[in-house]
Image (cartoon, rainbow, N blue to C red; front, top):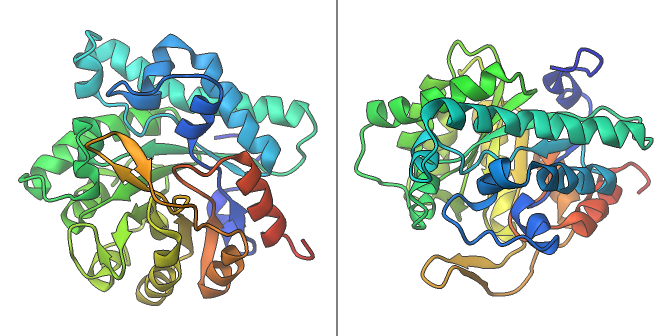
Length: 308
């Protein structure tokens, strides 16, 4: 961690922290094709500078936190591309350093506020690259899912991010596995589900799903991401009530991912003004996920700033 930056958990006690938006859509806006099964993680090997520039765009837009390009970076995924375990570990760890480099450049350009790095750990379904990350129910036990997640989380934790982002979790069983997998790593974490109304994507009630994290020492925030904006307020209220923890909220633009056509359908429904409602309901980490770019993050940051 950056010794000059306050702990993220301490900042959440007294203020709202702005997250970045969708890393993939910023990279696509910069001209990169992310149709590969590794998604943005492919660029960890092929064009790391592009990842730095994408993170920097969000810092300059007003984000306080960069979420790394490791969402779809797994040992299994890299193995399919012919990279051995040692090289895969190097690439996964590099995602944290690339975000740190973006923070250094942002400070050099005049950003005087604290900047943090969240190391992304996506769900098992992200590795499969078949849309199952929006369904859960993979047919694996909690113990099997823990064995999948732990090695990657160990690599990310060793790179010393400010927080581990256990994100887009569709299933309470996988959340249980992730909470087991982060024990003893020495890095705090947030846990965020992908939801449909008041249930996880796998169909479990959010009261039960959030309750899993209520007593987890490592967890500094719980909440939702990669969901429809209209599902955020209710989920934030449940998370705050059930856990008593700060809540994280970073929905998609309102469009939905079509795994068959590998494209986005629908219309943008994310309005920055919604962020104040989420904030009053208990959200302390607020940003955007897929299809949310730097201009929207700027609007969110201005909305969440007193007098903004």
